[in-house]
Image (cartoon, rainbow over all chains, first blue to last red; front, top):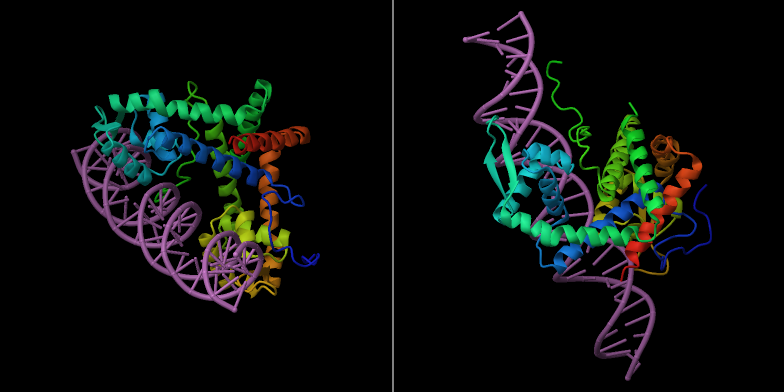
Length: 162
Length: 162
DNA sequence: AAACTATAGTTGTCAAGGCAAATATGTCTG
DNA sequence: CAGACATATTTGCCTTGACAACTATAGTTT
């Protein structure tokens, strides 16, 4: 069972060892990393100084309208503490604002500023559209739907485990 | 009920969100996060003090046999500096060892110890098998193959972009 | 062989995210 | 109503991973 094959597997490995095809988990990791990288590259090309996380926050803030910080955090799957700090940055950039929540004095109301809306609609959203189009261009729309469906099923299978 | 503070922090799947189904990128993120969480939970249940990254390093070290640190880093898609520190930890735990490479005095030869091999074969590998089985249990083997295929195609589409 | 250039590994630095504690406020129960 | 408990946000602490600088060694060129 020991790795007693021919000596010197040591130099020059090209990404993609034929003997060990990437597992599902590895593939997910790689695809996700590639998407993040591509989106950030597109954002930089538009001279937008936004991390992928910040991009997601803008996206959700635009989708959801006025929400609390916690709701936003859940929407982008980010820890509450991390969200506070990202909101600090985005507020400093003038892209969103925190206002007190009318009914709940613990909570905030997070809202895109007009600048934030403009950045989203005129630049940032297009960046992700380009990347996602590139990502899915090798699949028919049927296949795209299937991929989506499979991932959703994998997710429920994992979450329903207990 | 008393004193029960934190349950699963960010794993709420907000059911009331029909207007904005998760995008492909978001789905990938969620599935990956769920797999990482599940594998780490399984590892902890076996009293293995291993992070997901360390789990991956063991896996690849077992798959590849004796390799250089750089090759291992590429195999798990980890930065070289981060790899150094993970190797420090795994060596301290007695799971692998660094020996000088015979032909290249810059390089190392990373090898699982017998303890490392035992941990992998008797515990750690089974953890991921359980998780991956759970993840894929809702799909037929045809569908599993298709999912794998689609992800591979998405990956090449993104990488061949330039 | 000397001079470049590339590569392996280590280390320092930094930003990001997770977790826990703290604070303020809301909600429920007896 | 009082007290217990839950929730929203912030902050501190810690770990991780990316990136860059550095050292040592290989390989290549002249």
